[in-house]
Image 1 (cartoon, rainbow, N blue to C red):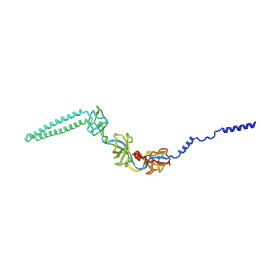
Image 2: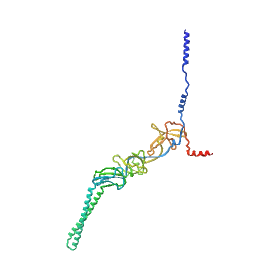
Image 3: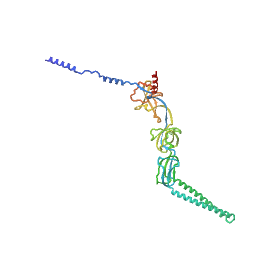
Image 4: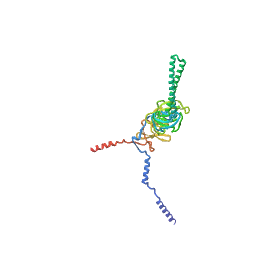
Amino acid sequence: MLRKTLIFLAIASALTACNKPGKEPAKPETAGKQADAKASDKPVQLLVSSEDVLTVQSNSLASGPVITGSIQPERKADLRAEVSAVVMQVLKENGEPVKRGDVLVKLDESSVRDSLLSTEEALRAATQAFDQSQRALDRMKTLRASGMTSIQALDDAEVRRNNAQSEISAARARMATARQQVGRTVVRAPFDGIVSDRKVSNGDTAAIGKELLKVIDPNSMRFEGRVSADKIAAVKVGQPVMFRVNGYGEQQFNGVVRRIDPSANDVTRQVEVLVGLAGGAQPRVAGLYAEGRIDAETADVLMLPESALVKSGDKTYAWKVKGNTLAKADLGMGARDPRTGNFEVRNGLAAGDTVLRHPNSSLKDGQKVEMAAPKVPALASAGTAPAAAKQ
């Protein structure tokens, strides 16, 4: 019985061993993925064209003190009332162009006109008094010649004539002043420009010295800036200035240092520097904030655009094409040129090196590079086709 049981257990063990799954062969798809993974570890040859690379060159880098300020017109006029009167009419609004001599504001001239009439009557009376005193002096001279009057009487007549003559001169002066006052009730534009700030309206009372409106010449804009006192020694008249104006985006404006204030501000200790605008586009709005840099010093350095630089933490590098191989070049960076936006490269590259213009994150050090052949113009290839067909 025991022998039969052992034989049965042996047969069951053999059957169990036969039913265990064996090691399956690798599937074709899995084998393909493993081969692709191994292939991806190897650098792929990079095909680039002449548009994908640039040559490192030495360019001029300008440096100098920062200048901040505002855009202001050189020609501007604050028109104020020269007589005390009521504003009758304002003929121009803000932003309207004006020509020299155009009427801008009319003031009430009633009281001033009455004063003019009074001075005219005073002049007429003084003229009549002078005529009478002159005739009296002539009679006294005739009587004196015949011995019928005294010398004292003649002298008195001459004094009265002189006083009348003085009254005429004074009356004429008062009349001229009254006429000027009448003319001042009409405010005119002193030059061609634009009304920038209207201060009064119809019916306002304008005392002497009250501001009526402002007129500016938009073609005379300049940059009135300030420079820190510790940098003013580097600023010289005639140096170029590049600056941006708030409201004009990234647009660059060019200027030239025209004047340097000989004294610093008592509060800020900054020195005012007047910059005249050079040719090209000019800002047309006064009062806008402006900031720029005076090109006090210029040096030739290696420059690269920001697109060719790759930043990794505190380090910056570029991909240099050396022969048919791609090499990673660690760079020592300098200042940024505000005129072009390029960065100074102090070390890591040399003039004449070729780098990728727009590198990406998939590049690897030592990767093979192949320069693509230049494209043949379509016009030339189309022109040779008929010739080949004729043959």
